[in-house]
Image 1 (cartoon, helix red, strand yellow):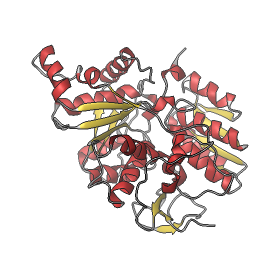
Image 2 (image 1 turned 90 degrees about the vertical axis):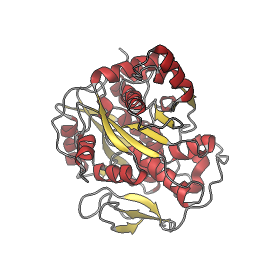
Image 3 (image 1 turned 45 degrees about the vertical axis):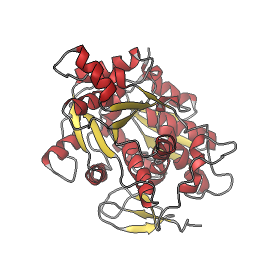
Length: 393
């Protein structure tokens, strides 16, 4: 039965469908997004979810799943820590260490949400939980997914728990730790020579005869990502002014946008926090489009980068991301490889062993703080998207 509270909508062309529409894209090829037909209910904070992860404590904001369909491994409920002192130390104040210390106490705050404490070690568990629950609900027994690592591990884990056979297509160059995970969860690992884009094309060809469980396209994957916003609001209220994301496919950025918009529409907040998409200079189709004032990502020549998790040259939801940035009053920017590695090492010295990609967003905070785009009273939140253990070896 369709959930009458929701519809599937193309945020670019405006076409809508019932929430049980079988396709993930509009006729023009844009991915669909699950949106409310009405105002969302009042936010009631986390509610008890016996036998499920903390994510499901917000199920009154999620679609109704059939009894027994929910697949949970304990996802959600990740903590946040204040890393302002470490983050601001890399901001070039031009006045020495004393000025940096003053900035740490009087300037913008940097809070890190520790998403790598999720069951498979990355934020992708949020989306995998809701997407695979939907797949189980509608009777999917076999599926295909493509990923650079974290999403593949998450989808493999949840498909394993659901009894769904999944083929995970990955770039042959992906981190060994992530690939080991996929195989341990029982999925069939398909290594594809070439680029991340070659991997997507191989998965699309294979999906012609089965179900495409794409974390970049499936509307129910974004549903789980919205809980990132609900958790921040439950613990920080209206204090958050800016949300920064290391951005490749942009699922967490978009999920946070729609989650915060639910809170605005329900009357709890006046506006969505500003969203900032941080990309590496080696792969920046969104930042380039933003700088040119365009509505679609621009074609780019991707170069090797330490931030492999966001090296996506053609993000399927790119136009939707750019629209969300504009609606929130934020923007997109790039950081260099040296800045990324410095941010990564700073996190390590702070006791936070995250994947290299997370250095991107700490570098982005420093850039925004240094050039004044984060105000003195700003409270910025960055996600530590994946565990450093995945890349150890």
